Length: 373
View (cartoon, rainbow, N blue to C red):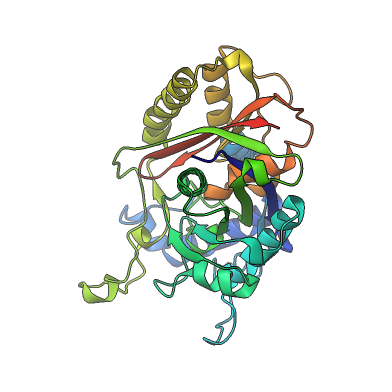
């Protein structure tokens, strides 16, 4: 059995930013036009009027102040309200693979490795731009990596589940070095016309190099243990899929073909599940909350992270113990905890321990206990 470690991480940040103020202007223009168009039906009680959004509402509900996206022009157009991504030919790199190369290149550079030294690529993300061929295999080809590659989807937990899969294969000796990459174009599945969620998501791509600890070239994080769990729930759901056109009215503009959630139920059910999962993981590994220097949590909502941090640590987290990045990036699904890890891990010293945790639709939760070496 070999000891796995994270030896490098990288973040690709899209070039365009949407501030809350910009988003609110576009949404309110859409809502005003909708209400005007449907004035008679609204007056008759047949259609519900669209309420206005505000920056104060967004920050209060989520802690989000802005988000990065691959295209803002379509999102901010009240007549469109979704990203406008150009059609690429089959001979061009896909947009997810293109994002992935940016993140993987940074992760490999930090690890001091060349792509040719990689023998596994896992593309773990909440949505994939096509069913096949696998995005991971395209990334493998673009990088010039060897071995094999595959896609996986566990929604917002995809990154930690991907790290567990890579770590297990390294432990077993079937691979020496892996890239776990998370290209998330969340702007594509968000319903920007829904006031309750129009502010939640942003785009990003993260990557980590996972390899044998005894072969790591520099400072790294030994993966002490991993733990994953799932429990079925419909409270976070997207009903889009390849069977859509085969069903009656399948191609209609249906709300359930985008991101949907029952927010209050998610809060009520996910928070205890995640807190218990982390505490059981620590206990099973003989680690106490006092042994943890840092928690890198899924970046969905500041209130959720504050609750989990307090539950796990038994007190309010001190500054720096549970870094949040969602004020800048918003919710980036599986990539959120890896952004936090990549940006807030360099200051740890040998012997410091931390825990990466992501959670979301499924329900699913994955945690990775690491130690600086």
